[in-house]
Image (cartoon, rainbow, N blue to C red; front, side, top):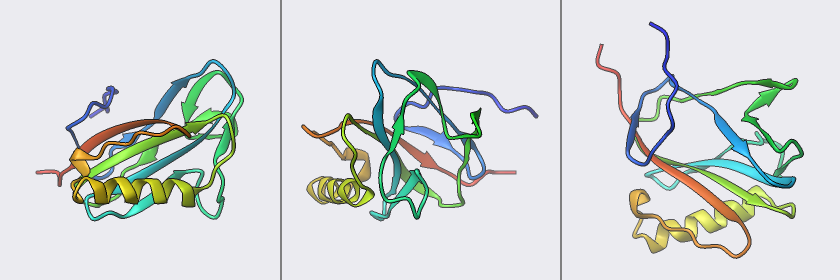
Length: 139
């Protein structure tokens, strides 16, 4: 059965093995980090992938992430079951995964460790996020 594309909205249900891709349109080059966080407070980089410690610079004003050799790709979701969030951190200046992780863990603590209630307000980054629940497929 072919997979259908859709825009992710807060509260969407996803499944292990689903493919996720980000489309973007920017007005000037920026640095970005794509990260995920699960309900247990584990923060993990999606792009750039380890061991790269710094945000990647987007030069093209429109495109999709991830990419390899100029071709659009997608992330395959892992087998974690439960609530998660994806975040896109964006800035005109370089920044590191450790800075992002500190910000996320602080917000997670303030939200009483409830990932669905997390709110991030930053003067350093523009932050975009989507909350989703990953469930096991019922075959």
